[in-house]
Length: 146
Image (cartoon, rainbow, N blue to C red; front, side):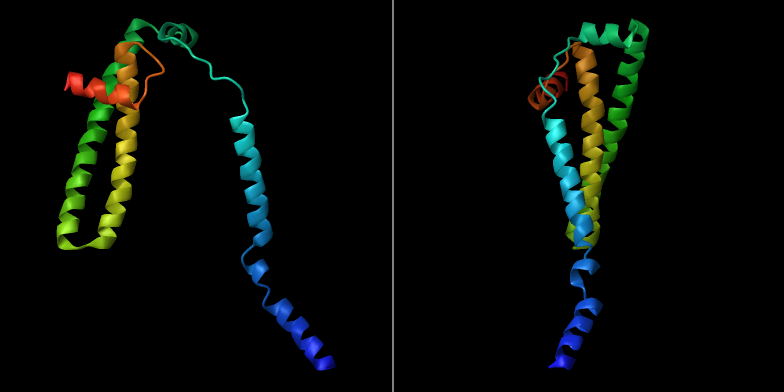
């Protein structure tokens, strides 16, 4: 009986699974994320700003706006071309049955699309001189201008 208690204690200390998994660290990380989410979500009303107000606040000149338009158009073009190339690569890898390369290509394509979307969305807002637009506005902008 005495040996069994010592054995259980030894096994409990040696094979401490909760310590191996860092359960305490995971719990504290969860609490931190929960607090941050609550703090971010409870900041109040969304401030709606017109393009002119943003231009005045950032002290942008017409020349700076035109330079940014050129920059956003070029960078969105580069990201768009890279995105299309990654889709072609994805199709080639799918035909060859290279599943690992396909998985990495999907994540790479999504990242490139996000960069393309960001730059082209900023271009659209500056071109139309209107803030607060959405995804459907972005699509209709490219359908009309394409």
